[in-house]
Image (cartoon, rainbow, N blue to C red; front, side):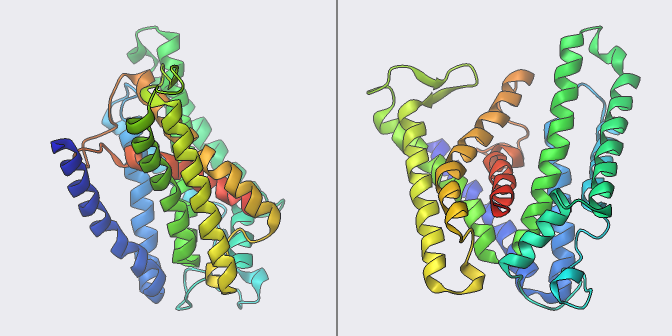
Length: 322
C-alpha cells in the first residue's frame, strides 16, 4: 500500500511538471512551439541516456552518443516544412498558427519516414552517421568488454536501437503535440489504460484461468489474464476515443478516421503497447537492472514509464499512412 501511495504521488508530480509543456506547445504560439522543441529534445536526450548508460562505456562516450543521436531531430532539414500544404512555405513550428489538420500531420510524418525524395536521403544520411559513429565508439572501447563478444553485441544492439527508437518517439510526440492535444493524449493514454487494466486484471484473475505466466523470462509478474484484460481495455479505449472524435466532425478530434486506420488501430495499438512494455523489460533483463534510473520514485526512469508510448507513437504514425 505504501508503494502504491508513493507511485501515485510521483505520477501526480510528473504530470504536474510535463502537462504544462503540452499546453504551452499547443497554445503558446511561436514561443510555445520553440519551448516545445527544447522540451521534447531534452526529453529524448535524457530518456536515451538513462537507457544507454548501462552499456559499459563511460559518461563521455555515452553523452557523445546522445548528442550524435540528436541528428534525428535535425535531418531531414525540411522535416518541419509545410510548403506543399498551402501554408506559404512556413515551417510548421515557426508560426503563431495553432494546430494542424490530420492531412498536414500525415504529410509531415511521411516527410520524415518514407517520402522518396531528397529529404528522405538526408534522413538516411543521419541514420548512417549515427550507425557509423556508434560503431566506431564501440570499437574504440572494445577492451572494456573483457573480450566478451556476447556482452559487446548486447550493449551495441541496445545502444543503437534505443537511440533510434527514443529520439524518433520524442520527435513524433512533438509533431502530435503541435497538431492536436487530442492526438497527443490518445497516444499517451493508450498505454496507461492497458497497463492499469493489466495490473488489476492480473491482481484479480492472475493464474486462476491460465496457469502459465505470460512472459516468465522477460517479466515474471505478468499473467495471461492481466495481458488479456489490458488488451481488451486498450482496444475499447481506442475504439471509444476514435469513434467519439469522428462523431464530433471536428478536424481537431478526427484521428485515424478512415475505416482501415480505425480497424487496424483498434486491433493493433493495444498489442503494440504491451509489446513496447515487454521490449524495454527485455532490455532491463539483459542488463540485469530493475529500473533504468531513479528519476521518478516508485516508477523508475522516463523509459520505465514511456516504454509503451515509444512503440505506440511509432505504430500510430505508420497506421496513419494506410
